[in-house]
Image (cartoon, rainbow over all chains, first blue to last red; front, top):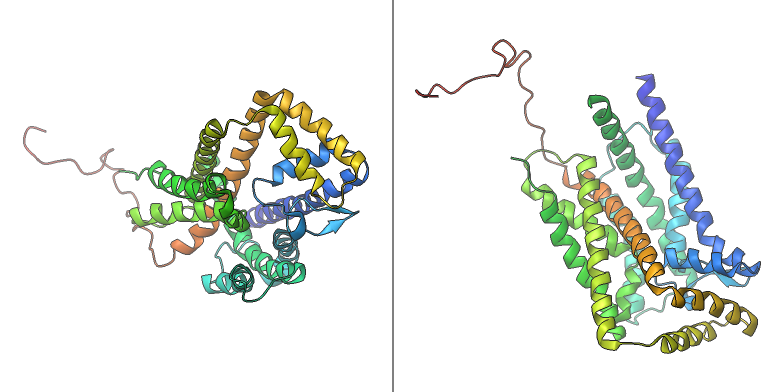
Amino acid sequence: MLKQKNAAKLVYLLILLLVIGWNIAIIVPSYCESNGSYLSAFLVRKIFSYICHQKTERSFFIWNAPLAVCARCSGIYIGLLIGSLFYPLIRSYQDTNSPPRIYLIIAFLPTTLDFSLGMLHILENTHFSRALTGLIAGIGLAFYLIPAIVNLFEELNLWFRNQ
Amino acid sequence: MEESKFKPALISGVIFGILLSIPIIIPKLSIANCLCCGWLLACGAVAVKIYSNNIQVPLKTSQAALVGLIAGATADIFCTMVSKFVGLFRSVSTEEMRITFRQAFEQQPTLNAEQIDQYMKIVDIFLNHQIAFGILFFLIGIIMASGFGALGGVIASSFFNKGKTPPPTPPYGYGQSFGEGPKSSYPGN
């Protein structure tokens, strides 16, 4: 039992480390560009280009250079980090049952509304609205991602033991 | 018989590959880019939904991750194929690509002339080794797409399992006394 708890804790810490690393990677191009490391900035931006449109006018700036992802994606990833940090205070990382799906829908509702209203030109969204609604979605996402990945590692662990 | 994981993954991969290709085929519809990684997460989730509809037992998270991973990779491969196909018709020369890159950098308000020159040197390196970097970026794309597809699949697995019950466990010692379990009583077998 203790072994299982430790394994779940280890997986949680691994996820946390990955999320921290991912959030650091977002600001790497800005830092590199301000320090004259243009190749690194270019490569990291290229990697993130597969998952984000990276429009400058929709991105936050640090060190007078845009981040690797847009404001909404930045909000989602920072939210994911906040959610992952507070996760053990709210749920046990051994619990592999995800919360009811309605909470994920609620978490993604603000960002969906913000995106849809902006696209239909009903209400122009701002950097702040994109990031804030993304943040809510990211926090919610953490509570579904962590139990699912812990469960995945448990299954893989069991599979390797049976081999 | 075990249900194939490839079929749902390929169906979803091709559907989302088409959706991801829209901004490449019709640049005016670049609004589709705004969903960013959401397309890939949805690709994995849809593949898992199709797969879970075809099986009676609860879906394992590892199975969902695998289905999502294949779906994400398929979507990326399909999208790359479409972009290469479209590229054949547009046949842009290296010099034209250089000009496009320079224009894109010049539109960035934070970049000064010196920084643009630095970026153009990097662009020149990539343009001089287009095949090598094309393969490298293709592989990076597959890794990113399959990773996000797997995440979509893993998240979706917890949703689509609800309401499904695992099959009853066979009684203890079932099939052990005779070695192979119940045998057919048909004559001649």
